Length: 162
Length: 174
Image (cartoon, rainbow over the protein chains, first blue to last red):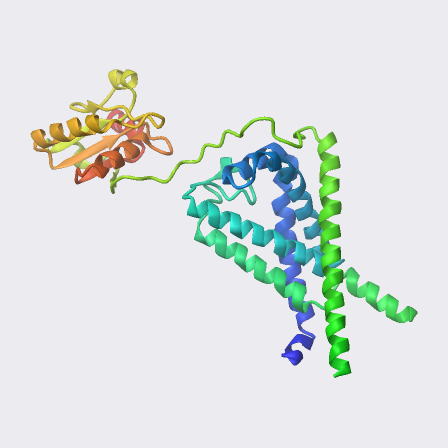
């Protein structure tokens, strides 16, 4: 197990996972940042959060997605960014399961608003997709010990200094 | 043993740093979001002032209905009982010959006694199938009323894909 953990190939696999997740999140945050009111409606449609928290979530969540996406792509504080992504994925999966359990026929709101229900309806596949992304994020958190990117450059520089 | 303990503590330390950084990233990003929201042309209030009007179709209850195309030959058969689910005003304007008007309203479900009366009419007509057509929108009033009717024990209920607009276009084409 320890040998598997130490395998040097993890860095490259994690790089692919990070870039994939990073671009997904950068793409996902775009419409939410531009149209917070529309995203707030998406959140309200899930009928999970109290009304007092809907707008706050609509304002803050897309920026967390943007930050996590950027950091994953750049490889700076990449494991922490992946942990943020993992936390968000857990939240999304729970929300999707609650919505599916309530029988709501709605858009996921992940990449577009409720107006685009045909493009991204919630179903079992949406849950599986999010679980896949959760697994990728956890892989980065656990196995990407010195992430390729700014993190690795900084580590190499600090080792030289020592 | 000491080596193991050292490794363990190092891993724990990494986890703590990771958690701390994750909290920092989330906090800074959230603060940035709040600040941008102040100057965003489409910025919203921090707390919603009134309930959001969410329109999500509720789970569909009722019986099974089958879909028919607007040019299905069974539509013109004498053994077909036709029901127009649209409002009376548009029904008066145009409908299929022989169709009965039972308006379907999402906010005001069809009363059971109306469905019962309809079932008696269907039975006395000796029809072999029931075809409901509505506004053809999404969701379609024809399909919804069809489910209502099928849910009350009436068998062989169909709805027309595209509803009355599709039927009318088909008739005009002919």
